[in-house]
Length: 349
Image 1: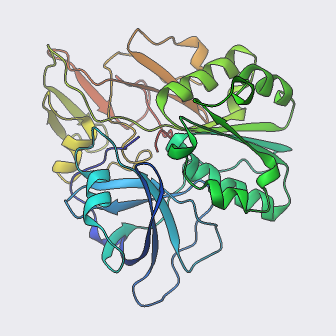
Image 2: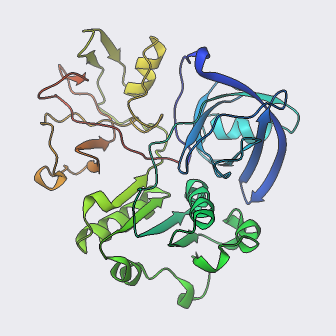
């Protein structure tokens, strides 16, 4: 699912790289192998990291790195061409070819592996395999215990099947295809029950429906929140009848920015030069206004019918469709009580 992040960029954090290889990995999924323009080593990264890519048609999009940490000779990203693409994934698929150059950001990671975990349970849905694949390769080389489940609509829509099959960790991966025999479907209750043990951490990435199912069932079955790690991918903002413009005030500077009905908070901030690196770019696209307090236990604050609460660390984030209310505003940053609570959390990819 395409993540959305557009607007002005800070050129100082950008690297110029060359596309050395473009490969059709599956139906509507292409991978892009990127290398230093003059053969220089690329910055190091850890499993779960992403880079922002400036696409030829002017969008800035974050994509997870699925290459292996420690290999500074290349970065590998895989991109799903979204049917509803506003230009990011469409531009990468249709306009970028091997031999061309791109500008990218340095790697950042808000979806890291948990150090000290006894075992890692990796769940990937569709294009959400990109960060999960890098994690699996790293864990295998490090000799750490893990199991991986890869769900897709069909084999034709599943990327990296050959690479996984030829890897040293192929025996740890189970594939689940929607159009396959019932016996190979993901038995999520069983997988969660078997792995609900002290020291086992769960990592999940994929479409929202897949994410909701995994995280919802994990929570219902008693998994502790600090053992759940996830990266969401948001669809493009969708307007609604009755949407109203509203003001966003930056608590530290006092600066106010008007957010029109057809833009997200991040887009509006980016257009006036505000760097919105509070979380994985593109994740804070859909904010639902609802006064709340900062809190550490998501169970103490229930979302309304459009809201969802996602937790990371000691804070929660109220993440949902952004709507404006007449006379309402959002306060971003600062201390104490906030008009809208949110913190760093991964969506994606």
